Image (cartoon, rainbow, N blue to C red):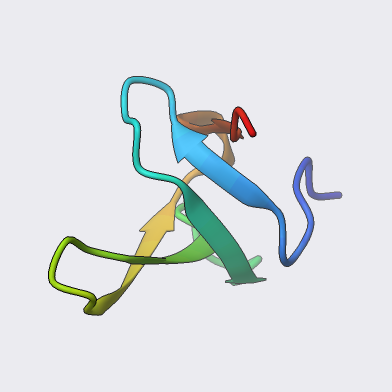
Length: 58
């Protein structure tokens, strides 16, 4: 059971980068796959534990 859903915007507890959840890898500890665009416009993908993420402040 995921706390988050695909397509949801999230951010790290102490970060200001808004990231979109693009999927999950249930067998991994860092099971939330996120994507965002950096300052240069490059699409970046990251993996996080659910406990590292919060719903983004819209």
